[in-house]
Length: 430
Image (cartoon, rainbow, N blue to C red):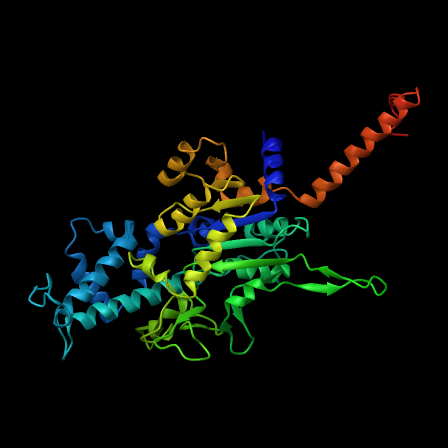
């Protein structure tokens, strides 16, 4: 069965247009948290801050203290709605009374407290997603193993260089993909150009890499270790700036400095706890797109609109396969792009995850053309997929060539009327 599944994956990897959609499940072996636990991890970093007191007051309004953690998107959406409601002077129905009053200090307002909580949660989410790829045989450590990200990407790079570039779309904020590609020496286009002052330039996705061939050939060769990386919701290295300017028309800048680690936020000095969450990013800045109900509208603004347009265009190409790894279908705007691609007769969707989500079940049950596959159970784990199910295409090509040679030799022997003799017992030892 494993060989048959590997043969299926090998066939998909040979398709001209290869796309990948990665969700939080693909990073779980490092982060140890999914969206359901992201809020709990973030709240631990609010210790000792004014925002922690605001959050404590808010949690008194729920019958189950675990509900916000189970659905961080709805919780943050409610916070945004409350923040707007407290700014009643700017609303047409300005006589609506806010449902809660926070204990004040000095001249604080309820809206300032809510906005402070939202900013600190955004900072804490960025810090929580700031994880390092484990040591491997490719890093400076003593480990002899290869991480799943490195394993997956190295096998992905074994595709035929004449095929289209692999396109990786991800909703994750972490930089595990970038770290793995750096170790493997893979060039990737992430939308930014420049070195010292990197700026977002969508034209970078249209660039390609070639190098000169031998001196006498007079032609160039295509460099095959290249990936196009689309971070659909932004990254921990991105910063949403308050005001765009001519050198940054999209209001997105790249932060080259090292982001604060969780252990660097909560420190002790002279026996007292100190919280350094302010070091993550300042007021007015933030991640690309926060997990709220407003994210669909935010994806209509540049540069996210162009990345989603590229996502849709990639899935409409002939001979297209999309690997959905660790994504549970919680983003309707992402799901819609995949649903629209089903009208493409050359589109194949492969959903990989230990436990199929309700979205994955609906997609499979509604497939009457045999173009939606689901790999679940132990084989649905990203680590198993990368190590056992993804074939090494170079090795596979060699095996195919050996088998073809043996078949031709046997056919030649039959054509000459003297079939090849059976092996003599013990000849191998001799």
